[in-house]
Image 1 (spheres, rainbow, N blue to C red):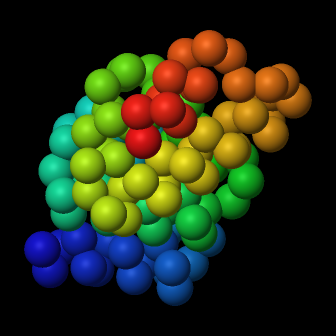
Image 2 (cartoon, helix red, strand yellow):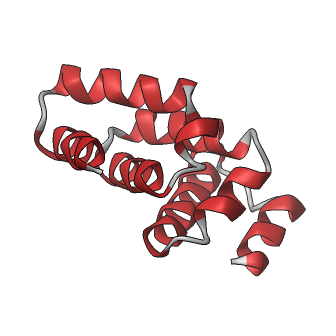
Length: 108
């Protein structure tokens, strides 16, 4: 759990380059990261403190695997992150949520 704490603080207080590399690692490993409680905390911090473009990349990576948002929503800090990712995806695509996103919202 200490590693999770360090990553969360780097996302919050780290340099732009540190945040960039952490976001890329989250994006590439979303499946593994979002299936662990400490990892969900890291993703929640990333979606809160990453640049707008990076938030989009994280959200798309998480929603590529349909079970990940549901898995994340089982943890208190994860539900807020999932809701934020839904909002990011809706805002970036300038579309209303498709039926599958309505399902996620209803399940949460």
